[in-house]
Length: 177
Image (cartoon, rainbow, N blue to C red; front, side):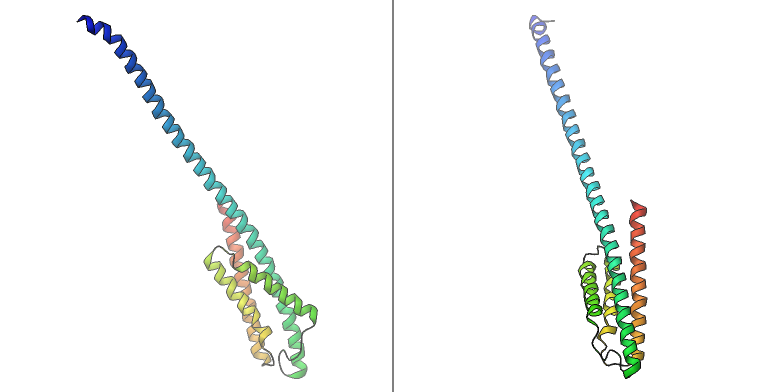
C-alpha cells in the first residue's frame, strides 16, 4: 500500500463513520417526527370524534325531551279545542287559555331551535316533518272537527316516528363508542 493511503485511510474512515452516524441519526429523527405527527393527528381525530359524539348525544336527548313537551302541549290544545267543538260544532273556535298557549309556543320554539342542529340529514327530515305536522291542528281555526282529529292523529304518528328515529340514532352512537 502506498504511504499516502495509510495516512489518508484513518481520516477517511473517521469522516465516513461520522457522516454515516449523522445520516442514520437524521433519518431516525425524521421517522420519529413523522410518527409523532401521526400520533398527534390520531389523537386530534379521536378527540374530535368524542366531542362530536358528546354533542350529538346531548343534543338528541334535549331534542327528544323538547319533542315530548311539544307533543304534550299539542295534545292539551287539541283536547281543549275538541271540547270547544263539541259545544260549537267548529274546531278551535275560541282562544286558548294563556298558560296553554304559552306552553305550545315555548315547546315549538325549543323544537325549532334544536331541530336545525341535528347532524344526521335523514333524522332531521323526520323531526322537521313531525314538527310541521304537530302545528297543523292548532292552526285549523273554525274547521271541521273530523279533519282536525285526523290531522292530530297524523301528527302523533309522525311524532312517534321521529322519536323512534332519535332513539335509534342514540343507540347507534352508544354501540359504536
